Amino acid sequence: MSGEFDDLKRRMDGAIAAFRHDLASLRTGRASSNLLDAIQVQAYGTTMPINQVANVSVPEPRMLSVSVWDKAMVGAVDRAIRESNLGFNPIVDGTNLRIPLPELNEQRRKELVKISHGCAENARVAVRHVRRDGMDFLKKAEKDGLIGEDDHRKRSDQVQKLTDEMISTIDHL
Image (tube, rainbow, N blue to C red; front, side, top):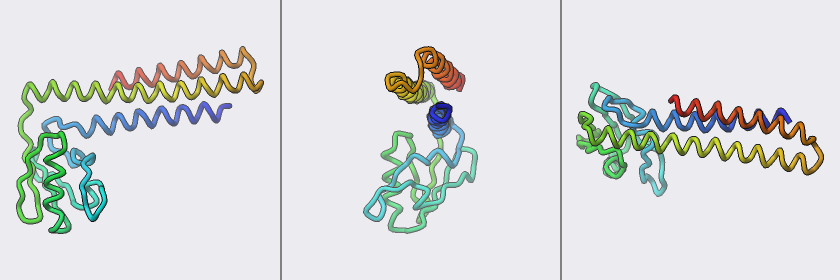
């Protein structure tokens, strides 16, 4: 039974890790090589992450540089960056793309807040789904006679406490 609890905790931790990754990929006005991590490029008949077809670096605080390894892929990488909802306009320079990061304006800040709230809500929903799985497991275990009613109530309280802790962590991020 404690193995199931550990599994629930691991899955909830995974939801929080995914939320942290989503927050890190939001553009905050400062260049970071992980800003482009979520971009998928149509390459060689399949879709792959940008870091598998190019190298992303930060030469200046407000500039990203994307060095595409295969010259034939420059157009696909450019298109993928433009079609992402990040608002970037790359400048093609041979096999390199330079991406200037504009100053954040009021509208973009509000949009970032909205996106971050959406990411937080998705993380909360993921944690609640894990909680529901745990509660369903406990109900089934009680129904099958593996645990008693008192044990079911005690473990349900533990799952709820863990859920509350994880949601509190999400709210603080």
